[in-house]
Amino acid sequence: MSRIFGMITAVLCYFAFFAAFAYFVGFLAAIPQLPTNIDKGMAAPPAVAAVIDLALVALFGAQHSVMARRGFKDAWARIIPVPLERSVYCFASAGVLAIMFAAWHPIDAVVWSATNPAGRIALWALFLAGFGIVFISTWLINHFELFGLAQAWAHLRKAPMPNLKFVTPLFYRTVRHPIYTGFFIALWATPHMTLGHALFAAAMTVYLLVGIHYEERDLVDRFGARYVEYRASVGMIIPGVGRRTP
Image (cartoon, rainbow, N blue to C red; front, side, top):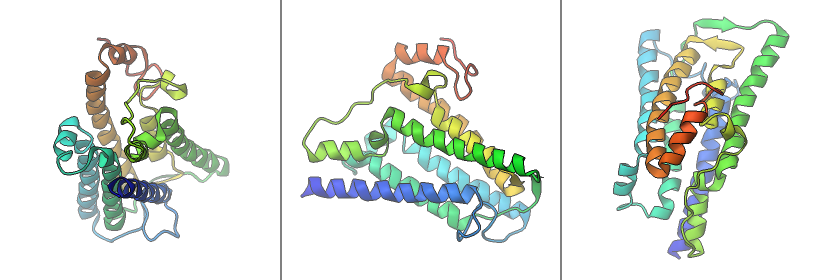
């Protein structure tokens, strides 16, 4: 029963994160029908709104980065079964995203606004392409392992836990972190950029760059010279840019 319960828990965590991610796409696109979005939420003076919004991004960054570190995982394994560690991580991420959506304070000042129809279509296409890159990249490595389902499935079948493999398919042949590349594109590609949106995009950009630093340190620890060589030959988020020689 514990194995079945674990599998059910992993599935629920997966769909919770999927729902939060889907809302995030609409949130960033400022879909007016949503209860809140990047340009719709609680009201506050711009300075107060900026402090609150930066605190929300920092909360997400802290949760997302700290829980991904190996030291935290080792300590967390004393409480959460190893097969559910990734699922709980995804569920916690969904919870923090929900807090950010609910507490977001827009800043309405306009940074830019594209009026040319062709330009607006191009920017929306770029926005969708960014999230498309994110989604495709999760499948290029191992979508179900990334979100915890593979671990719970292996536990249910009493099979060995899946091991993280070093592979470089498609996007990974030209950039080391295509998931982050997709996020960077989606964060900034918008025909109507408000100051609140720009603040969010800038804060998330900083967080993602910091996250890459710690993620690569973990990857070097795990894969050693193989990843060091890969890092020296492939760009970080832009092809050819950000290669790091040993």
